Image (cartoon, rainbow, N blue to C red; front, side):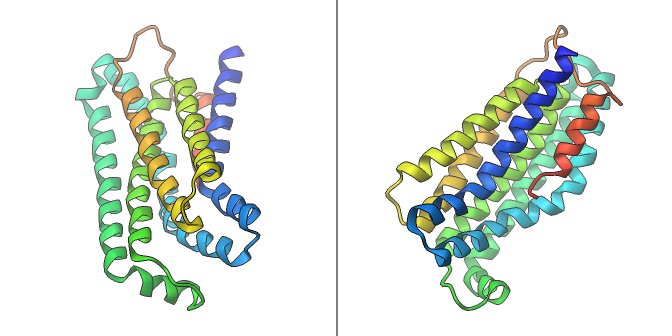
Length: 232
């Protein structure tokens, strides 16, 4: 029961941290500047990250049970087997998507944003590209998070998310950049920190004494529900 409660608490921290990263920028800028226009602009810019995350839910909800079964089957050599291969392919696909998104934003980003959200705002091409890069890293971090949960390292995953979310919020409070730019930079830096922390955790050798996520367990179901809630 203690293990189950610990896992549930870790998943709640991950979910709360994700919402802080994706949504607190709009709220902090609104509270700091009192400008509804700036808040609306930032919301539109961060839709670049939210929209792919919504589409990625179909992958993330099936990735965890898939990785769990592979890890149980392959044991401690997982990094060199199908477990590691599945993680690498998905991470590379996420980074490739981020690169393609960034290139598209550099080419037609401002025009596309005005078409989607109206001509009321001027969108900075470079700032949109920052969010595009951050999106690829964030999706890669989501994949690595599923791998780390499958390895039974939910507490370390939760700490990684908590540290990253804290950095994001703190950066917005202490930064002296222009409001929209600071959110763009904060999102990119946070995605880089989060993906790096989760990658380091994922690559750490799996100790046979560690409690791994069991296929079909209540913990696996809870993590799948958390993945389905991503980006909402």
